Length: 530
Image (tube, rainbow, N blue to C red; front, side, top):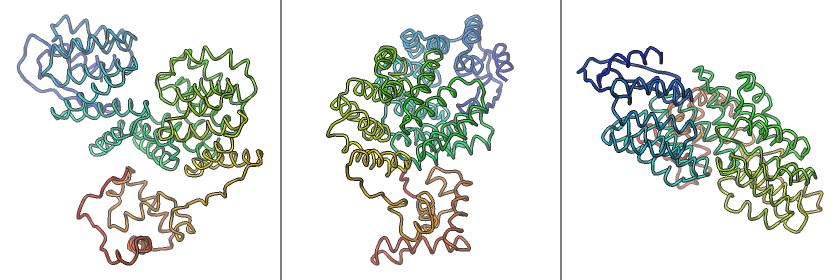
């Protein structure tokens, strides 16, 4: 299709000769041709589908050949500059890419598509240079430009770029959720899955295990149903989420992801990191060091798009395994890893590894300070390993803090190991928190999950499955599965029975002063709690 489109563009230079609408993920392309005035100049942007696709996919020789042909037919400078900037970015010439994108902005300030494309490159270039504020400003301008011009696909792409940058920096997830809602509203599935995957990692890092699993399941379901080529990454992500609850419990998904896309280096890196992290969290530090060391070598040979903290966990595992000399030898290599600046959590784990190597309790406390919200899971794991490796008074307090996070997040195997470490120190062990704490007793006894309880409360408000799906960012099929499970667990025959059960539970929680309130049935749009 790209070849046919490129040929079409090469012989129809008029500005209205053709346009491309893409869902942003390359899964679906629709092209339409319109008759119109023919001019001698050719607009490369946005009618550069094959050219932009080639550059975005890293097929640089092909993209540069397109550029030369566009120059030969007298293409406008704005589009040429924007595409040239993208090629420069892929070649690693970051500052040159930023400069060329500014040329595009000056050459075509009124062309919304050129402006968005140039801001895309400029923002990514600044992000790569660690100039996050400039990158965010570029992405925000991109979003505003696309929205004002009614270019929904470009608005969605801008929201995703800004959301991903904020995710990598450990910032709130507002733009990712906005992108997800926009993609869902317009039925654009590849960006929807990408948003799910980013939100999945975002929740997992914050020890919101059930929510991470829900996003992972949603992504996998969409990929399977629509045959999206993001399936291997979605399955891999779900494996990691399941491993939060119990180390190693997601091995089936990890193995499946590797089978789905053999030879995919990014997937091999993710698998190596996930398996190494499971060994590390389980206290099998020699195994973790071997697995994470191999993964680090692969990362150096083939840098990953979003590098996991494998090199920095490797350093920690070496120290925890009593292999301090190897850790000191590896430290310069780890410090110089390109992965360090790519994701905020990598900085945390490098600082933790350095503190463990130095035997510094104060250094470990400083390493995790400020990450309590954005990386609650990592902070808890760091506290647990710190208590295991470093002697001293803080250790029991670190373990109790870690235990609180693990139990709140449903990380059962980590919680069990932390209790064992506390007992080994002769320290008091807090009473185990009951599973389902916070749920009404009736629901807990029936085995209702927290997510099913959310669905039940919305059923009681009179919402349809589709409305519930929109509220909870799930698919209608997933909601129907929860409804069926609730019918069985609560022993009711139909939806009316669920409404009655949900209202009765709400009355128990709210007290007699709120009883008798009628359920909402489409009278107003429900507020979005997520």
